[in-house]
Length: 114
Image (cartoon, rainbow, N blue to C red):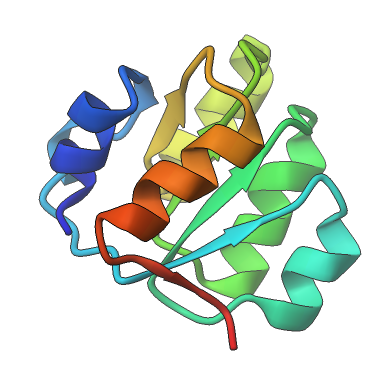
């Protein structure tokens, strides 16, 4: 599924990486625990989190995920968004809760880390 489709499906706002929405997403990792993301993430995934500090982007960069989606209406500050732009990591935000996001994406054929 293209990141642009996910953006529309989950009613997301693009905070960084508008030009990179054509990336393919086939798996999802969702957690507010960055150590859990690092332990289970695989390259080319969508990372869903409510943690909006700079560590979320550092974690995404180290784990090699394709994009970050902030849930529950949380929004990172400008410093975090600028860091994501430097790292070329698309960043989206939605008002939806993590549980609903995961259910919707699962129903569209995306899987979690196994």
